[in-house]
Image (cartoon, rainbow, N blue to C red; front, top):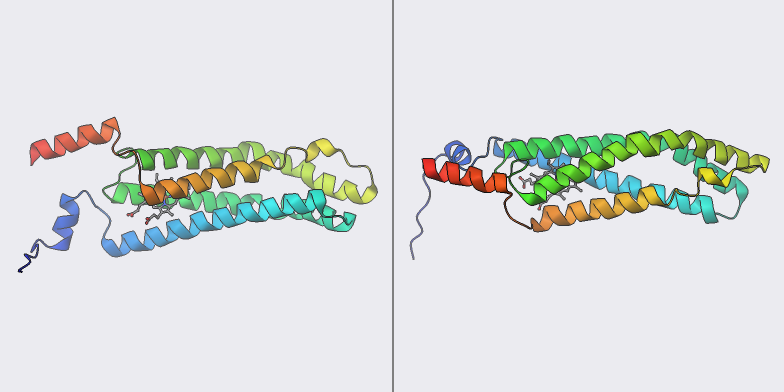
Length: 191
Ligand code: HEM
């Protein structure tokens, strides 16, 4: 059996398929994207562990340390990895055939990423001062539990959402959006 090779140069093939990012760059950005998304998930796991230690850690010194670590170290690395996943995802979308709003799986991931980064800035970060104070007050014996009563939600919501985003990235469900279908008709009509 003979196979016919596509003699079109790779750069021309990429342009024809709507890929503007050279292959090597696409791979480098994809690595950045997957690593930053993985780091984000890892930081969420650390948050969940610190929250559980804060609640059930037994020793008051250990619980206090968990809350103070949460208040001091977590938010900015989490936001940095979220923004890196966002920026690298946008570069991948714009630089490949996937686009930003051509396919539902990309558009939904974009929305989820934006919502999570906004929640980190608007909900999580402003509450961290009270969490640190609670950790300090645990040692003095007069803490106000309201400061940490809802701390379970941030890691639970974020881990669920990031797992969903990973499933979307791997399975790429739901096909094209209306915009994506219209664009394909335009491009195919021109060919
Ligand atoms: C919410 C956090 C996100 C997570 C956890 C995530 C996860 C992933 C993973 C694991 C892959 C690799 C899939 C594979 O190669 O089979 C991937 C690829 C991709 N992601 Fe994301 N992503 C996120 C956000 C975004 C955003 C905001 C965009 C764009 C707006 C985006 C666009 C893409 C694109 C276009 C690819 C495919 C790249 C290619 O194969 O050329 N992602 N994502």
